[in-house]
Picture 1 (cartoon, rainbow, N blue to C red):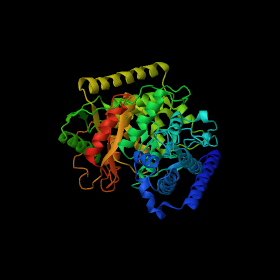
Picture 2: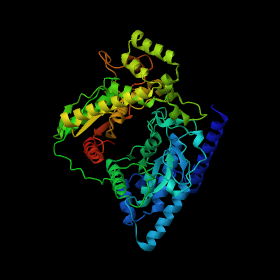
Picture 3: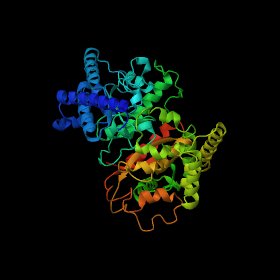
Picture 4: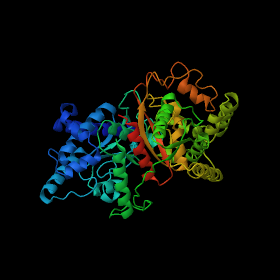
Length: 526
């Protein structure tokens, strides 16, 4: 249940959220009662701004805002994706913009009149940035200067923040759940997770509850063109500084550079990271993407990257260096979510017990990969911290040299993780499945994700002897694929979206988005 502080904060925040959602439902009606909203919520961000500036019949900032507020309320009812509600302020701002436009004819900014959601981590004027922690409830952002830099840029470009979205406890999980706002569900299946740490944003965008969203590491949208619109606008505004204070945040003040996609790209690809065997559905997503690129005349070459297990070991070593004291200090009296338990287990065990457990896993259970990663999940001396910092740099340099110099790839296509969306609760013992994305945090790469197919029960079933010869962790693979209740089940997962990662060098957003747009057009995912 949690402490009395947690319970009070949870009850107060959820009651406030419910009151504000009900207020809008009573005032505006339900999305299900207004099918005419579809023309607004299905339009791309670029189309919305063009229609507003072009005074298209039936299009006003207020009308667009009303449609997205209704859709966001419906998304909240379906998935529990929202945290902070700014609907009334957003409506008032929309009405003011319409009046000003009528009077002056001026509609300035690439996001003029466009609603947008922001992950709960972003400071937005008048509301909390609690990230689901009771310690940070009832501490709203009160000064304009204290808003997040990206929020300031969005407002300056004419956009209207209208809600914030849910996150996992500590952000270090892909089960989007915390003790204050609860769990967010996958829009395609209420029994499954939407991913993380931007799970609330993902759910809201999928249900057309926002035209643009902002996760903690980049923009989120339903089309690559909308990602390009947001990235290009933000990067150019940040480069020009444009009268916005970033409160000392270190930014690369370089303008957007248009990417002229070569007629023949050289694309690297892989389906197996050798840490946890990739499921048939996620492997097929990569293979079909590669086949489409090959058929379109591009060169595709199988890539053999440095071991992903080493990347996961480095990640575990560095993130646990202080025993997760700083990370867990944010949770205060709140109960720990199950998805965090395996992550922090090693750092919470007495040193001798941790040592014994590592030996048992390695020598008795014969899972060296799991044992090596678990061994590094513990507090470290300053000397050890510098050692693992050096290991990170060596690993990242080896990866970058191989991918971008020796193999000379324009981009890499690979799985997002070993399996599609898992059921709630599965992440308690399967948090290491994040290895596919963790590697690119360690390497510091620019990465985008886009859906390319869906799980098919007949095509994606586990073949016989699927794990035979796998060099991965058998402990994890048994939980994913073995026993009577495996985490991966193509029949139960039938119809779930499956995406791929598109990877490029650091600071190459233009290139990655260009390749993503090419792949999006080839795939034609619906």
